[in-house]
Length: 342
Image 1 (cartoon, rainbow, N blue to C red):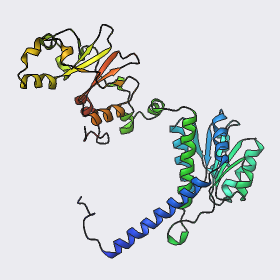
Image 2 (cartoon, helix red, strand yellow; image 1 turned 180 degrees about the vertical axis):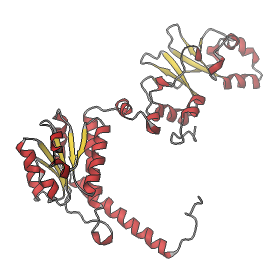
Image 3 (tube, helix red, strand yellow; image 1 turned 60 degrees about the vertical axis):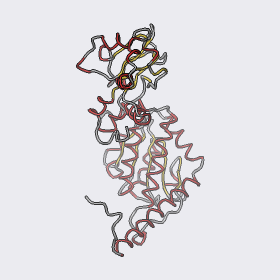
Image 4 (tube, rainbow, N blue to C red; image 1 turned 90 degrees about the vertical axis):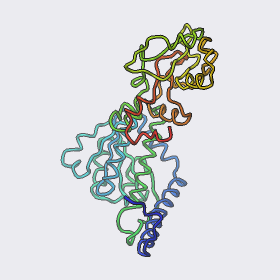
């Protein structure tokens, strides 16, 4: 597909772009205002969910319901158990999926949505905690919920301000904020996230480096007193030959690294005499290494940033556990894991 950014476009397209930018800027302004006006009620909502031993049950109808499904999915993937409940189905038996220790998050722009408001007395009768995301705190929903996160008066973008646009964007942003603030409060880290995203390119980025590193006889190890000739004269596992020798002490602690490229430079500069000198004299001391609890995405970034081909993996005592070789990563990487700057 050819690029169109450098082409002359007709005025009708210019007008379309102008309108699109107005819509996006309109929604961006609404989000900025919500961020400015966000107050302690947001923190009360976070504390309510964090202290609950149950799940977050998200409900809403129409476009708000679709946003609710996404919020529930984001909560679930960031360490907060959550599921979506359709408000119409709730009053036909599905209300049984709401437990006494759950928190119900209700979404309604107007705060007067019949299907959503109908749930309030039913939830109150069971003493179930409720949080409302709605524009008006004076609406039925705003006055009935235990906690309200008000969005303020919002004007929908484009097309006479009729289709839900700004309001659903605002709900989504507040829902994301809830999920991510909760994740931080619970100490939800990259390793936790990886457990919930084992598949796809995201899962590959979050794969622990210990699962893809070379170990045992697939790693070339040497002691600092060995000569270069001795090191390269040893028999190695040729099935997974790596382009680097890792130099360690008697406790397997990382001292340095010597690569095939370093050997080639010695030969190219006619310094063959150094082949019979200790490898510590020609190795790179204190080389870049990666922690054993890092993930694959971090390794890719480090290799690319420092233009490396090999990366020792060490534990908290600087003991070598393995080696990441860029040739292995190329075989693993989908296009979404960018190695074009490595």
